[in-house]
Image (cartoon, rainbow, N blue to C red; front, top):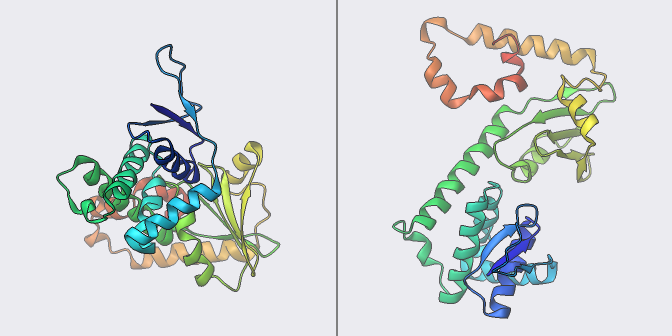
Length: 257
């Protein structure tokens, strides 16, 4: 059986609810945008239902605890259709066996891939927390542009809200064309048009920067140069911790190729 869903986590949880409701457990998930009609199999279209998704989510919390249940969502943020299918199958197994201990069976290739994906997403989350650099615009808001490998923006909101609680900021994921804006009171998800998003990436071209921010950038670059001991440079190790794809967003790397 093929289930067509919208690609959201709520849609995946709704699909799981539907499998138990319809007693259809041999299911292949597909995005509507990727689906090609077949003469031999009629798909079932899954409409995301927040109430059904919440019931599945609450069931996962009972089985795995709140943090354990959240691991399925974190792995989902990898945006990998194969991992989405694995998450779908593992959650079904959890409910059918009424157990969470099977996730320790690393001999199961699906479980191994699940944990490997969790580590990758976690690593990318830590990198974003370490590598994000804000630029101050003339209105006083701080702006940072990112392009993480995975959709980790939801995982870093709490960190930046606590760390920069006294200033307005926007962190924008240019790859997925949405961002989070903090206005000193609450966090709001924002989206931009393609034209504005492209302009935003070009050195924040459509924002008037505060002159003090340029001085901050030069101070940061000076500090980096003063602490960079040439004789101890290990480029291979450095690239492992600071991959080159992040350099364009780091002030201390702006003069590097």
